[in-house]
Image 1 (cartoon, rainbow over the protein chains, first blue to last red):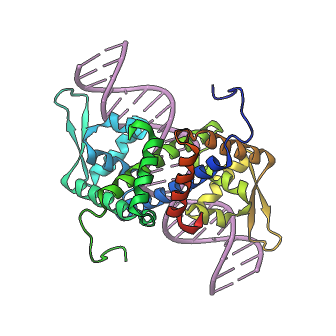
Image 2: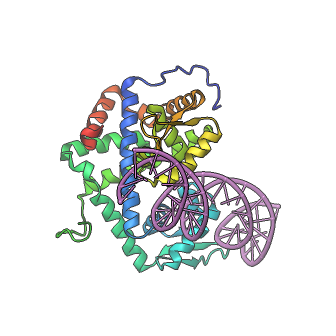
Amino acid sequence: MATSSSRTPSSRADPLTREVVELIGAVVGRYYEEYEEAAAEHALTGAQARVLGLLFLEPMPMRRIAQKLKCEPSNITGIVDRLEARGLVERRPDPADRRVKLAAPTPEGAEVARGLRDSLNFAREPLAELSREERLSLRGLLRRMLGEEA
Amino acid sequence: MATSSSRTPSSRADPLTREVVELIGAVVGRYYEEYEEAAAEHALTGAQARVLGLLFLEPMPMRRIAQKLKCEPSNITGIVDRLEARGLVERRPDPADRRVKLAAPTPEGAEVARGLRDSLNFAREPLAELSREERLSLRGLLRRMLGEEA
DNA sequence: TATTGTTATACTCTATAACTATA
DNA sequence: TATAGTTATAGAGTATAACAATA
């Protein structure tokens, strides 16, 4: 299905779409960069920061972290190990199923997660260029792009 | 300058800005995911695909690749090694400075880079939700966000 | 002396496969 | 037997430090 889907014009997108894709790429690069910097300020790797941020929203089983991050469950073991060694996350037993371990942020972990989130909000410099009206417009367009999942 | 910039309100951004930041985060996650998938379809890692895409735009010295990707120059050696081993990139001497090695895509590398770019354009599904007018609007907003660099 | 690219080293992230303890 | 989490392993990306060749 990925190979020969009948028509595959050499220029797949009109210039406008192509340019918008490029601009999104630029935003992605910038966002990613700032996210990594914010994580590093707390001596965390990007992956560790993402896991901590996820658990800050809601404690969950190891397996579900892997699903959210779209990686193999075996990777989560090490990431949570390192977060746990730093006292930012803890593993709790699940009363309902003794196979399951629920990962949850410690109070200190929650504090770091808040700091991370705020750094990121603070690192929203690009948005400062936009007026309130423009941000409303951007919000609408991004919501449309992302469909109903957001 | 990163530590104590006087006022640091606990809620740094208004709800609208905060939501837009979240939406951008969602777009970033989606874009990144699709980029990695497109790279994997060509049996490339994300980093390899980024280097190849960069060289496709313009051959450049190893050092400059590192600057563009914001990583240490020593990392580029290995990435280019692997691309070169696959015949996608070659190292050329710089006539002007014999310390410098210019990395450039081979014809096959250029073809793969084109395929990658087109996959990415094709993976613009989210944009399909928007009308031409909306895409124009989005382009304007993204340009504003990114300042004059885009 | 300073710079370019490389090597050596150590750590993290990643996927795969095999293991354990539960269910 | 199936599932949750782990361990073991190997490959790749990353930063740091030291090195050779060239400027």
